[in-house]
View 1 (cartoon, rainbow, N blue to C red):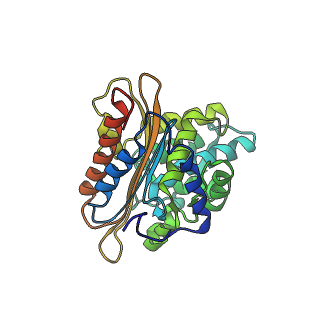
View 2 (view 1 turned 90 degrees about the horizontal axis):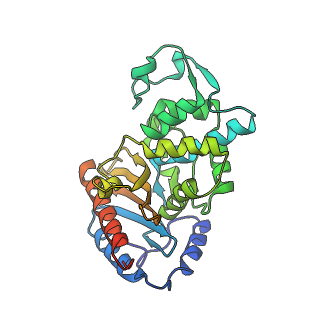
Length: 311
């Protein structure tokens, strides 16, 4: 099932994203249809729903964009922007320090920061929490940012106010999704919305420059999911690559709820693009899902590198 054969599964507001596609359909020197068909060929072979969005100055291509894809930790990109903005509005900086109580921490969730700070009370800067949430997808850091700085609802409102495409929703924290896995489906996005947002982070001014530079730096040093989008540029020289991954639980049918990556690529010659790949309800292993994302990224990167800039 894909965009060519199904009804739009998202709220009506998602229809607006299709308007963003029309302007670039007939751009010169770009074979939109060829890239689209190649991406559909991969997506249609996968035991799950695959959504893809490719965005460059010359073209925008989407595959299965009209589906609500659970973001999982991809929402930590949105969260970082909202938390940074909240700190700025309060007249503070990312150096501001929070006092964290031991009872605020979950020792049984993914949390590399606990190897540094332990399970007791400690002080930590807001900037460090953002770095942990983005770079290592730390769930305790994310939960603390939601409880102390910007709630899920406030995060949703802020990013919706600045995003180029508002086809997303954030309602729940990592702690809430851990307690009830089905809530993961309610923190969703379209691939196009995610691709446009990460491109905004690297090419536009959204919040204060120092704060946004810190978020960019975190995205460039993400430690998770190197076998996903980054596989395309693992051996490339001079390519700037920033990304945010998201990985989900298994649902009652035994399927992976989500396996995602959204990234920004800038080549040495200055050309750039964003690519988002979201996989929903996947009947396979995480390694197999990562391989799908890597294959898509390699295809797009190879076409983008082509000598005549045609796909």
